[in-house]
Image (cartoon, rainbow, N blue to C red; front, side):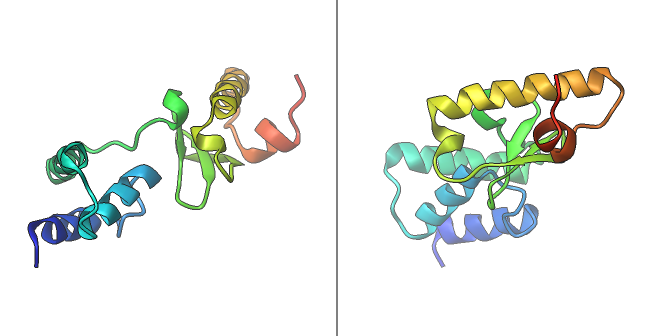
Length: 128
């Protein structure tokens, strides 16, 4: 088995079969196993492997907005609480950045009221 495959297996073992990885990191792992990385990609994969093995991996913030993350099925979370679902390219678009900032603002408002943000009070029942 190749080094990339061994590293990928180790990453998967340490990240709940990849469920704890950001979608872009799972894709990077897939591309490494399939031998489809250029030099920059190999460097990124090595960094991913090191961060996971050292226990320092943290899923990156969605659109760079602190406390927002997204899983492989498109569910969006605020500090681990499900608050929204995004499909298509929203997670990677300029419009998505605007949406992410609005979600974070709403979550801050809800937390300021002493409530836990949820899909109900952030999206479906949002009243400003």
